[in-house]
Image (cartoon, rainbow, N blue to C red):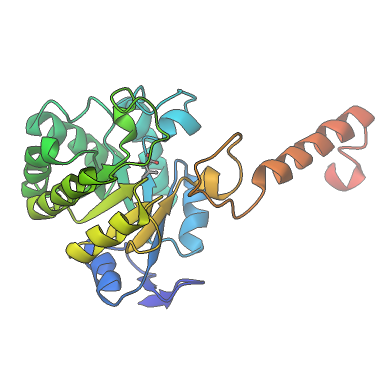
Length: 279
Ligand code: KIV
């Protein structure tokens, strides 16, 4: 059974989880699909209801949930319970879990051990890892073992210290040709999709044209097959200056702040709880 996702041309299953085949078929039909990050059961269920076919339990949780200043410090132990909550809070989306920094770079055996935790302990359906030629052996080993892998190229936040910050657009000039080669290599290694982060729109389109697997853009222009955003950015909850690609679709920070200020004021004034909200 499938139903149209509100606001999209796509149809997603309503009686089972979205599979890689569903995502590939949507892309083959020329349909654009949207991913979001998610870190808890409540929002995961809401995003599923709103028509998002795949959720990423991103290592961005290190920053937006755990309060670290980069994604580098988040651990597998911190992410596994969040992935488990997202799986429990949903019934039809595909849940992709990020492999955090230091949990797969040492080699295929380490990558497989970490991915196994996400699939067995959290019930995730796929994993994502950052990098190109340096992680091909890991991607191959995971896919051989039956673990679907999403790649991640362009701005790879786990390399923040090598990149000297997270603001620079990646893949300009010759760097773009190398990124394209990495994308092709990841597809050959068995990745089922690739996130492209903070790259020129032209490169986003070029990589998408070249690959058969879907590209999932975040700051990669309009021509990737899918898009992903950190949900707090989409909702206008994240404070401060945000990257240019972020479009806040709501002002959750304002709405929530107003609600809490009103509550605090009513408690102070003794007008909450009133008779209607008391037993
Ligand atoms: O961790 C994350 O949230 C991500 C995406 C935004 C792609 O990797």
